[in-house]
Length: 517
Image (cartoon, rainbow, N blue to C red; front, side, top):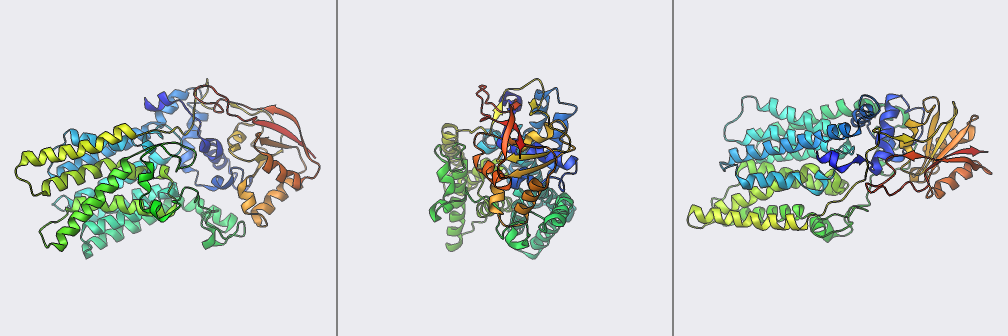
């Protein structure tokens, strides 16, 4: 219902590479096209295939049904989160009351979680797998050892490894779970053995999900994660750079330490998308307070002792956050962390109120209630949601009509996000596609740029360009390859997803032009 109410997915990433990547994989175009969707065109396409296949197949005339189907990832994530909170209350011996329900709601309504319901960004399928892995290891710390702990942790590792293999943005969660399980066992050898099992099984699952695609990239470019981390693999296609997006990284030490506090008010620290979300800051305060409380108990030589369930939760969330912060700091990739913020707050409030040296159970109950309400009020008052891009539903799921090209043509995609149009061009299967984006500029003088230039200069058949009004830089690069070229017979592209939900046109002159040499 949420997904259908939000409208047709029209996000920048969908238009840049989610549709193109699925089509290119299904048609074996890795060795045919060159950088059509820029850097993102070399991402593992497996998660994009169901959405594209359904939208161009059995559900091509049912866009609302496809939106509802895509929303099941969100529903599944919320269900698993509910089971995690329920299992937590059972293991900690506290009732599943309105406080536990609030923990579920807080996690399920985070700005990055709720806004991706029904979208093709693929962060929710990854979160579902990661949360399932976390759920599987929780019984290890319930007091009674399960019958087959190695079997349980192995499957947890498989789930986290699959998430990382399907989309490497989830690579941080397997090592975080490994560290959390070991920490929950108080760094003992028994915990280390389980941690090793998680690490090995997650690596095997990563190879299973990513191995074939990585092998193809290795054969083509010399880098299995091309163009990422090329400072390690030194592919001749690109310079020795990481390729990771560092634009959203903290800009100072203070921001790196207290980044969640930048999100308390409406801001653009995550790019062009305005949002505000106090969940992360409240969870961070809870973690700091809990750690300080137990550190004080250790120095004071009291009997304070953190439960194994809480150590598992707190170490997993905090280590995931640290790894995430160091690697890319893109909040859209932090859905597993965000969904657990409500449980972190509940756990911290419950544990510290129970351990407080006050008289009477009623007073402890009142204290925990007041503390939790003090957290819920700013969450309700301060949260501001962004929109990644939605359009009104059309008669078809992908009501996209870029036009017709001649057989054996070369299509030059100038700038981004235009590659999504190529699967819908008439005669696209018998043609080739190359892209000119910022990636070509980054790789100037290397194999990628040489291949794009050679594809364009040596092509003998018809040539077309897909471009917008803001494609001047890419058009200038094309002109440097083909001196004297000009665009002719330009036709505007008709696309349902080139508008806002209020039907404001955002196509920026999107058109298909014949290239005359």
